[in-house]
Amino acid sequence: MGIEYIPAWMSELEEEDLTFIKNFILASGSLKDIAKQYGVTYPTVRLRLDRLIRKIQLGDEQETDPYVALIKRLAVDDKIDFDTAKLLTREFNKRKGRK
Image 1 (cartoon, helix red, strand yellow):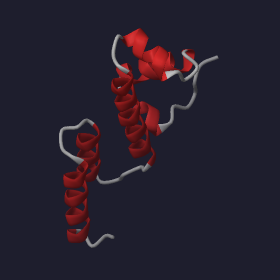
Image 2 (tube, helix red, strand yellow):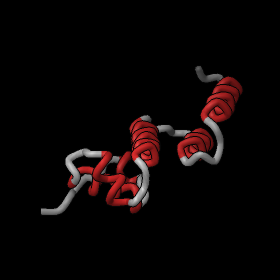
Image 3 (cartoon, helix red, strand yellow):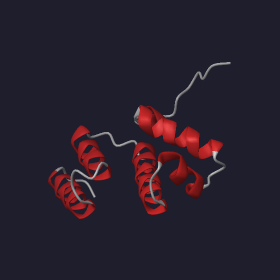
Image 4 (cartoon, rainbow, N blue to C red):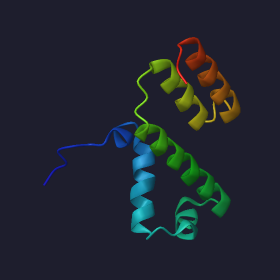
């Protein structure tokens, strides 16, 4: 039985993110076990999970403007900070006459 529908948030994830999700589920959600498996500290795994959560949340928002979507992806990938991303999107939306 294959998947007939892939949610938008899932299609935006990289293979590495999907592997992390699989390992997380197989570890019954234990961040401690995942940290051991990846050979990193608990805070490192927590940070990775938090970033993954933000990616999924952004994928659920269904942003229609490619510029705003790019800004959000850059923020999630730590290319720019979230305050800068908010400022850029707010200014962009203001110029476009949006909220």
